[in-house]
Image (cartoon, rainbow, N blue to C red):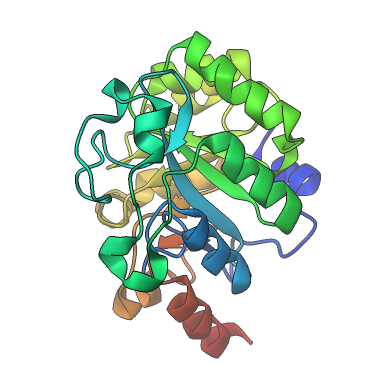
Length: 263
């Protein structure tokens, strides 16, 4: 499946790329407006109608897929500890919202299953980033959550980890995949073919540093989402480059900027 086929089978709305307006992708939910990777951040992103909601995925000590970016809970909650060493019950006690304001107190680290149920019921499409390396058995837990919530058509997977994406290809073949990179590599086109990926997502700096490599990959039929871009001057440099989406902490600002340019 190439990116055009992915769009045809998974998205009925606006088609990005070329000279068209790129998708707005909310980084860790609407993380500039609500605590990152919480249901509040997902709800805030959904409320403004972003094209994709990016969230991060780690594993608890009980082997449950949890929506969190870091390996520890120290930065984003009122407790401390390594995610992989904490039980689901211990993680459920952590307040993931109060650090951003009293109005967010009581937000929790959501299990992937809880977030998927929320999105299945209330709307949205998820860009799901697997952090670090995942075993096929762990990915099978994710597969079960996606299948039982009927969300396979509304999830796109991405990861820096080639072994993880390889396992996703084999365990969850019905969910499309994207390869994350800091900097594009000339031999990545062959890797994307092997992964049966639909998109290739380099950093903003990496895209500008090796733009010709990135353009060759886009010309081969792959989608491209650039991360993480918050400055309007940087948005301007990306317009007209053919990219398909911009991942940002400020999706509302980006929507306004693109509206002024395209609408």
